[in-house]
Length: 112
Length: 177
Image 1 (cartoon, each protein chain N blue to C red):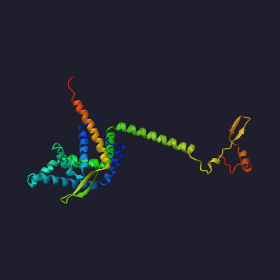
Image 2 (cartoon, chains in turn red, purple):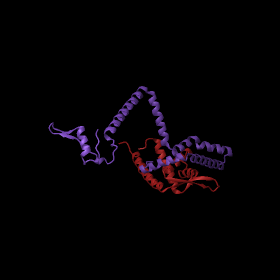
Image 3 (tube, chains in turn cyan, brown):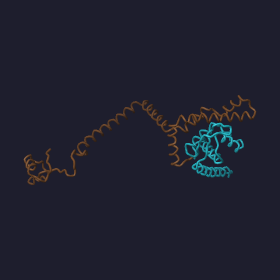
Image 4 (tube, rainbow over the protein chains, first blue to last red):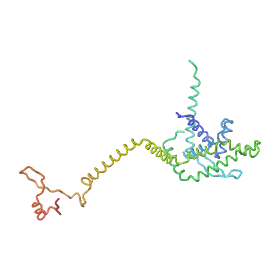
């Protein structure tokens, strides 16, 4: 069980970042835009939480990064999912599905 | 995210490597921030904000750059060493605030270690330390017996020792103590 709210949010954010990167390699800004877009504006990241998450995932070996040039000839750090990251994503998705399903079941409780 | 033991070990090792590459990480942090803020400012401008406001809004939106720089640093820094240092400092402070306990604990430790070391040194010197002779398995102790008094291992009389030393061919060398 997650110890506190921060843990849940952090775990969910990590999972969403992994999922975003499973779609393609991109830099931090790209991930931000994709997340906003995909969630229809619900997840407007406090950008401050994205980079710690990226560094954490990289440290855990779930993503890799390298310098590349953007279309505007700027240097940016591009992140990509590793094989381990792909496996972890599958695990997390499975866990999330089970958890949200369970929560939904509980929320359907009616007074006896 | 709950990681396996292997994943956590790997993460901790990478952590330590990160400690060594701190300066690279710092400059990378800076560059990534700058790029991100620039892109955000550009987007604001495209949405119609004037250039200065666009950049300022981007910085605000970025939400306390130094705070998340700290958070990022926490992620890649070797937390193990910092935690150890912090724990040691805390322990020292706590000990200083309870002097009588500290003195009692230190005295007990000192007495215990001192006594143990002394006893061990004595025992080692007398019992455990091998004698400074080669071919230990060929060393024997020779006694004389006195069946009249019922003694099996008696100290050897000097005269006997002299005789054995001179006459006996069973021993390479004889010494008396």
